[in-house]
Length: 235
Ligand code: FES
Image (cartoon, rainbow, N blue to C red; front, side):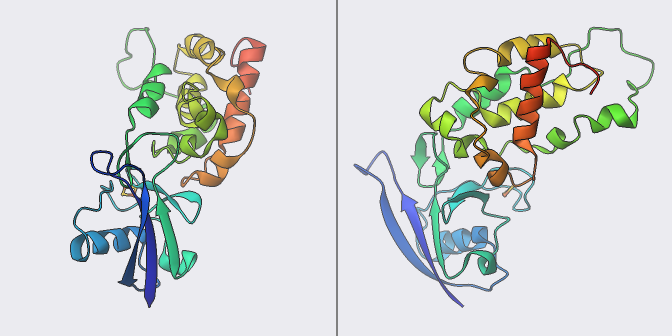
């Protein structure tokens, strides 16, 4: 089938403003949008710039806006988006070139929530055991691949990029509700600050955008509740 791919392009070093470029591509319905980008770069315009690594929905590096929705280009099939495909960079982060954005703000917010296990107890002889019910409490938020689809679909982040954003809160949730971790109070203090969870207006864009189907708004709600209760509690 013939597919028309319209891409928002911009090279800050040579262009005064972004522009649209259109490419006609032969595609199979089962091709992924990422395949089309690779084909365009290989056969039509080698200067087209985008990120990708695994091509299998794991690394999170190819988040873009496809027909108006934040998606991983490697997980969207042509048959699901039709013959006219519009691809743009994710919003709210500076464009380095074409579909590649500067992720530094995003990862600074990630680092700000201390996304690692904090436990000052002496290490046990073997692993730190955890029962299945305790593990289940934060299972959903372990699925995050840091693609930024959620944060860059969030109007609160667009309005104020100092807002830590849904991805950072999801990462914090993963450790706050881990009963082996001892850093919950520190993280809750960070997240109760002016750029933390209270900037979430429960818009649900993040839930729609997440390629891992994480119930992000629920996770943010659980963090808000923990802040209000002064701790994690038992459920
Ligand atoms: S290229 Fe790794 S998630 Fe798409």
